[in-house]
Length: 130
Image (tube, rainbow, N blue to C red):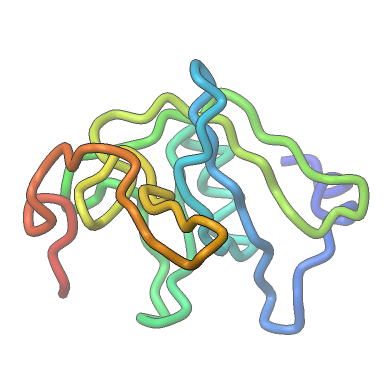
């Protein structure tokens, strides 16, 4: 792996960088998650998304329990080197609540919340707490 790439990135004080996950075919933003150096390296090596869970303090692969994986098509980083854009082919639901994308709720300018898409699968089939 070319170490010069990692030198262009600015990880935060916790060694993390935000990663926006986008469906390549539609441009739809599916989710945002945190990556550390190891999860980014594993993502690049395997072309599957790996992340760092801040709440569980655990390295994890998207789809490891649900089978709803992300095939990585492209990895980009912004001009400041402090965030990633990862374009994927999404297999199944990206959201642990069973939706295609984590951004399934809209809020109007009065604060009313609506759901903008149908749930694909029951949440318990997507995410199993360990």
